[in-house]
Image (cartoon, rainbow, N blue to C red):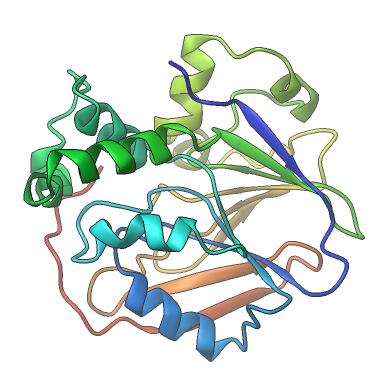
Length: 238
């Protein structure tokens, strides 16, 4: 796997930093939700906890969003499936097309390659500095109980946990991750954000009808909810 492991982001000295749950190719709904919380693209920053693509009708616009200077993103399992598919090496254990990846087939080969390379370049984790301490971002789960271990080379099993695991939330494990103020995940759909110790799960189904995007202020850890999404997309998901 040639994905970068951990990216460290310096403190935002002028505005706010927000993490958002899985976007899944619904960028218009995301823009509406950002407007509803008073997001200021001139000074605020948006951090995606992964799954920018698949299922939603605007997945092909992902490069436009990644080009915005105020957007930062880590890699989710759907981004992983997409780049593997786009670059000619489909992940053999999951049917990407069945799980919302058929949009990729509508694009020319050159565009597929561009998207594949961009998603492959997304890191598995971020560490965002804030005035109140660093916050970690990983799509699915942290493979360690000490954040300092994320600064070491990851094994294949640890990478898999970052992208796919639902173990912590299914066990309701509220043991904190040490040496980090908070860790933020998406991946696991729920009606409302859930906190377990210093770990926050913020994927509140912003892409299906009547779901909503949840935003977490990375400095204050305050929660902001966007309006309900008024669209309906296929409900297959992993």
